[in-house]
Image (cartoon, rainbow, N blue to C red; front, top):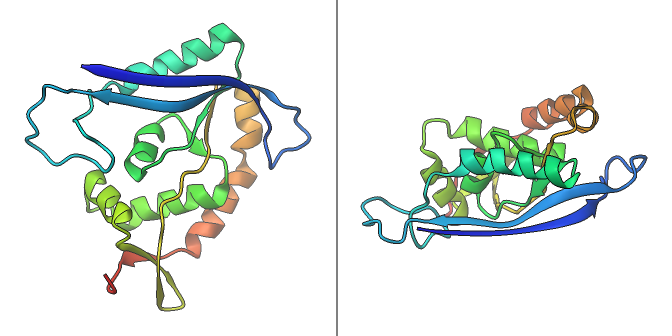
Length: 181
């Protein structure tokens, strides 16, 4: 078994809340777990060479404890793949409400598919955003996901206003499997 973990400790500035001065956060730059001796009996997620170890719940607890120990107010990451965002979404949310809306809308639109299938479709550029009946390939782009151990900061950032913006964006979103590919 292999575990790769690269963390950075740095001051973080909230770009939509400039009134809050920068504060310490843990940046999860890389997290990868590999079951290198596993027989590849099932399809891997995009970006994987080996199956994972299923350790995310343990890491979630670790990140919270570490943040507390080092005086950080939480952690953030930028998931490279949809399935990574899905995994982290148990404890992290997209800071940008438009990105959170896209994530939720894709999840809702393709609820009948497994996460691996949705991630594959996104990676292969086969999911389209429907815009006035015109299909536009929806590219998955990494974006900041945040998790706070500081409840007051959590409530400021992930406020009712943030949630209202998400619902507004979701009403405007429609996704489908692309016909052009």
